[in-house]
Length: 252
Image (cartoon, rainbow, N blue to C red; front, side, top):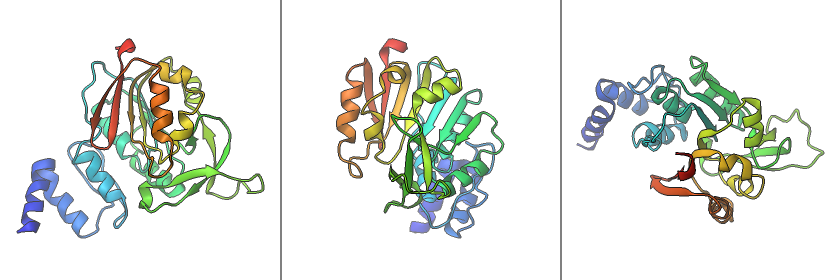
């Protein structure tokens, strides 16, 4: 009975493709998931956190919120395997999306998932308040969606695929000539502590919508730095699932 109810819910959520989604996930054939919300197949890794992340984005619709404007750019920080980018690209097909992911296996699968979307630009970097700092990607207990980053010693070689460079949001604005930021989505597993520690004044004041998941359980001080920073600006605040959604009332 429980199995049938789960199948029924898949069909309710995903329509005609619900049966195949249910069957493929149950039987671990997840390299070619097709749903009506996304115009291209999605590749997921069976037995990993890709599966709950897929359901979080396309079942719970955690990034499906209304905006009083049509976004033309999105910064997707903590892009993982590109599922949020796919959601935004299908909802806003004319939007440029810059997707930042530090972990190599996630980044490689993201490139597969976004291959048919020239408007999604993948960057293998770590988002931070400082540019061109060397950091290392560490595993956490959250699986493929829970990699964290931390500083490294100068003795580590760049050939280590876990060592990457940081990039700031100001860097991204300069690289892509962005005067304002329509959506900044931040899910960076505790690195938001550094992001909102300093050097946020320019980009945050020019952000129309900020979507963020805070991770004090991974890094104490995330919420403190975040709320200290946004308190300087005229943001309204709401919540959907694990995400805080902030709208800059001065830019609407």
